[in-house]
Length: 457
Image (cartoon, rainbow, N blue to C red; front, side, top):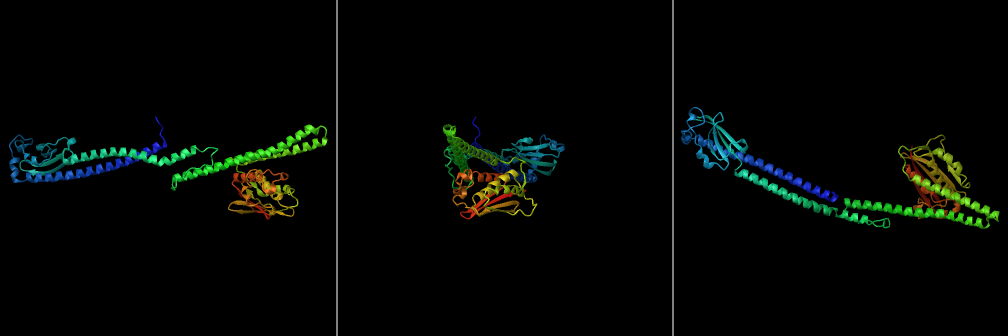
């Protein structure tokens, strides 16, 4: 048995809905017609019975009432049997005219209708008083063989036939509608299957109509954009990490060969090579530590793991250490008022790592005689910290890439500065992990301003 696919479910839903509507409409039409027919038939029976009543009450009808015979009544009615055959030509097929005494006994009847209650479809009765018989009732019944009853049955058959035709048409319409509606989705499925890791630049064909399929296509294309960017970033990261690790390994390998050749005969060569090897080993350890820190910063915060710290305490711990990075640059921070507590929603170690990267960068790339100014403010439940320097600045072409991993601006290409190109990427990942943000504005030759927005504690 084939599984119920989405297209089959849509077809069945459309067919069942259409069939249900047709059944409700048919039922309503049939019930309405039946009630109207019953009212009409009852009214006709009552009018005809009224005519019979008038004729029975006329003098000319006395011979028929006093006709000798074995009657079913009591008294004089036991030897008299009313004759109603005169009304036979006026009765339709299935109609029965009866005369009953006060005890419900049938005195006379004429017609072809049934007498059982189950056979009676319509009924009309009238009471009158007759000579000899006393109070009697005239009853006219219809057993379902009249033209109205036949018409009612015929309408029922036609509606049932129409319902069966509607069911077939609903199934066909459901299949056609589902097929035409899901055709763009099938096309999208085919396009998605053809997109692989080597063809992430391809995009889905988006329908021109601004409908749900258009939104689905746009959403998937947006996902492909993010995936392509993520894959490209991963490739660049692997290439850059390989390059960053390849350089110190090549230096270590070169000095190892030097030691093998001349290290035994020359203590100076041995000491120099070992010094270079130790420096490159230290750089690799720092690079690996930063990569691990970046991976940790990009992971989600565990539930209940929100910590707070005092921003002023972090700055008071950091600034005395970073001032030695470039003693010729003035570091200005107004820590007043004394004892003020500025709570931010981030662990102290994470805030220290972010501020260290930002402040050290500002000191490194500010020439002698320049200044680095640190200020804080409050807005919309956030603590805003700005670090402004009068350094070399960053060009507008380089500014969009400064948060990329291993990216270095033109002014920081030299390895002597000790940067790995991961500091700003780590700072951005940490800020976003704890609900904050980082933004940089810069003008070449005038300086750079970094704005950190922490969630208030």
